Amino acid sequence: MYVVFGASGRAGGETARALIERGAAVRIVLRRAEEAARWKATGAQVAIARMEEAGAVAAALEGASGAFLLNPPPVAGDPYARTEEIGAALAEGARRTKLPKAVVLSSVGAQHAFGTGVIATLNRLEALLEGAATATAFLRPGYFVETWSEVAEAAVAEGVLPTFLEPAQKIPMVSTIDVGRAAAQLLCEDWAGKRIVELCGPEDWSAGDVATAFANALGRSVTPAFVPPPQRVAILAAAGVPAEVAKALLGMYDGIASGQVAHEPGTEFRRGTVQLNAAVERIVSVVQAA
Image 1 (cartoon, rainbow, N blue to C red):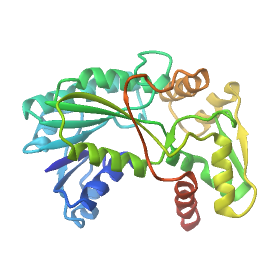
Image 2 (image 1 turned 180 degrees about the vertical axis):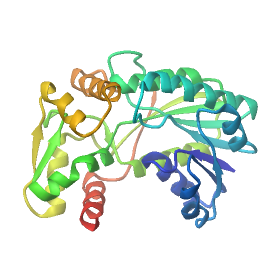
Image 3 (image 1 turned 135 degrees about the vertical axis):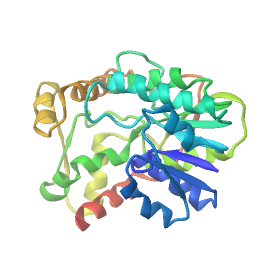
Image 4 (image 1 turned 180 degrees about the horizontal axis):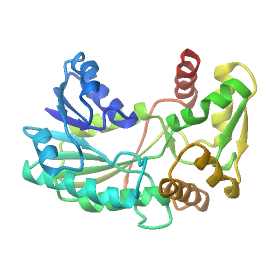
């Protein structure tokens, strides 16, 4: 039985689907009971738990042969304090149940405790969860291609792709489909101790490459529109992003621009198979169907 936390999100959902496609027994851990029906329809078990509560985490992990653990993306409050709370609860739950194996979602750049904005919370998460399970793999993917869905409407409607990334700067990116497949593969592998596995797409891509992929999907021109740092705070505020969360997110883009968000030498390295055009076509199809 594999337990998957965060299945209502991108990486957790893809991990759950990849395990189910493998024919594995899966227990999905959700915060809200109203999301349970669609997962039960796949044959998965469902547990309802808050990741901040060690007892609820332990109950969800009972009998697991492995688990996919993560720190949900911040939406409010202090992201660093929330990481401490969730990381401690996940670690305690794993220890109470003597969890044999954990795959922990982290990020490229998580080797740094500072200078990477919100990614630094994953440096702390790794520290909190190290040794909590008998075997632990920290899966460090690159920038999610699916993050571009947040500005996809502008690309579809206006032919403009707003970006906080320099259009020509190629960075590690990967589709969450590949993240889910990699997490499922790791859970099904045998190993002992600690592993760090970095994951990227078939090649590194830039915001310009993403704009080209949108253009290919739409059959017309799409231009990347770089947003300079002084304008970003106001844009996030207008989108309703709380100040503490915005500061952490913007710190990540500063870390990418400075080269801090980069591979750590000596780690395992894997590349996925989902091409940029295919991932962007999926994003466009969702926007057009809405």
